[in-house]
Image (tube, rainbow, N blue to C red):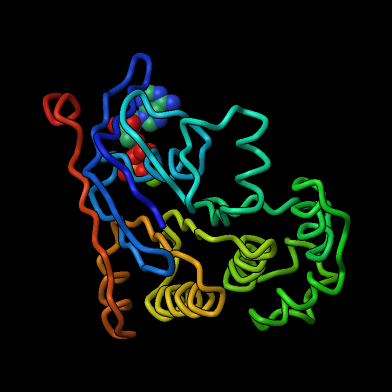
Length: 224
Ligand code: ADP
Ligand code: MG
């Protein structure tokens, strides 16, 4: 679940972004839409507890984020949030298996190769575990990054522009994969995108979708 009220964020020397109030139940699918620069990535960073809001309240997976100290936020994020960033950030020097093990170490857990194999298998890439990221196709790398995002069974999956550099078939694949993974895990799924194909793909797959539309900040519009 994600609940926010009067949420805003001010970048020093940048815009102040105000976000609409949100109240979505656990397991929901949320489409965060809006043009480039409207604040989608910022909203994801706030929900992930990576930045503190300038004002407003935010509760994610039952946790009021304003109550979290920085160190506690790191531990909370590792267990509660699965982040699929726009740039996948797989370490080039490590194998696929080691990249996933890093997520376990970062969360203070010991390496669990059985769980890593299970997460890779669920995304159909178990046989790639000993490869390096440079030996993966774009679609395979995205599956690996998604396996890493759900490795610790997060309550909330946040995907930032997951279809940005994909052709139509791969974009449909990516959305299907995100949705089926979130449903299997009972996780809330947020897809931030300005890509109209995502809404079309989600509509094809049925189910309730909550749409949050963001507008470009006023001072940004003033500059155009
Ligand atoms: P989106 O993901 O929708 O493209 P972002 O959340 O990345 O939008 O950015 C929202 C707005 O905040 C943009 O106008 C952007 O230029 C501005 N912004 C983002 N990061 C910073 C920063 N570190 N400092 C100042 N302004 C920023
Ligand atoms: Mg963005």
